[in-house]
Image (tube, rainbow, N blue to C red):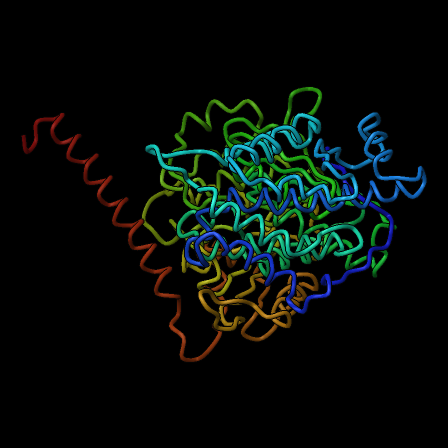
Length: 531
């Protein structure tokens, strides 16, 4: 478990500079080659800023020890002898013990990339919790004989990071955490198609967390955790709900799994720098979920949050049939090769305990694909299974152009294994397509809009042009289309359904028609017709 917490009240300051921590952290990132190229170097930048925080906190702890034993030299010796005296023991000892620990890295002047890599690996060796997190990157790496990040640019980055102190008395854990999240968001802005693999817009995470209302001590799980933002949001929202009793209530226990090694490392750094408790595993959750109970079955949680990659098409029917964890029940199961969205929903459902609740972000088409078509549709069949088993509590339709790897709006599906009696047999649909402000490069939901949407989901009441409670009979009548845009019109001028949604559904229908035609041609050939 990553467990890095403090009960001491912290004072925030900006080291005597007017520039905000967010501005400083972005300027440091841009010191390599400017804002345009900064996202390319995130795997170098994030560990360095993370290490600067570790160094400054270690300095603060050494100063505390030195105040008791008389000198920093003795404090270094004591910390080396007993690592339990500090959060993380850093084997970086300046020639002058009065100098900051970070100066060991800052004063590198020759073979800087090699030196930074050596120091990172030394820190990881002394701290098992950091292994694979900060020692993953080779700052001396080359491609085709040329350094990926040459010493001059690396030196510029180190110097830019050196301009602000990140110790316990300089910046609160939540402030540095928010700034770190800001940096991740800035990388997402320039990350193209890869951005959605590690980042969910913060307002979406806040809405999900507020609607799920996590309580102190609960266990929260994200099977596709990316950089860990949704888990962090749950902790922040829980602390907000406890009326400022921060650190006086039991923290959430956060669990996540991530497939991409670099993103897994990012999630761990994000968790530690936020001063939160968590366990992030690495691996393919769909094929090998790491969180199991003692009997080898799937572990279950109080709350589940997720934003899996939309419409994954590399899972086959065999992946579902061969599952030994009871994740894909009879009547639901394989949702079709073209999209694993409802496969992820089934994994999430299986990961909820008896009173568990979940919020999962899905492609908009997951709410309607297959409905209204002639014949059967595997994705619709799974959707119907969830409706018929009364597991869907709410569906939220988001505004367009929020996500960094698509302009599609997306939906949030809310599940509840223990729906209150008043909500049974019904689903709350929320159409928030118009609750946004224009932004650059992406739209965003302002705080008032976030709270309006969250309130609708929590209170579970109808509001004109925003929310509507629909019973299962009406959903069945509409062939299990659960898209809020199908039932709630946000303005008189708006078309009955968003064009993007209709186009996507037409593409699915055309694909099904081609597959049917192919099957028919095969049969005709077999019986000798038209050969």
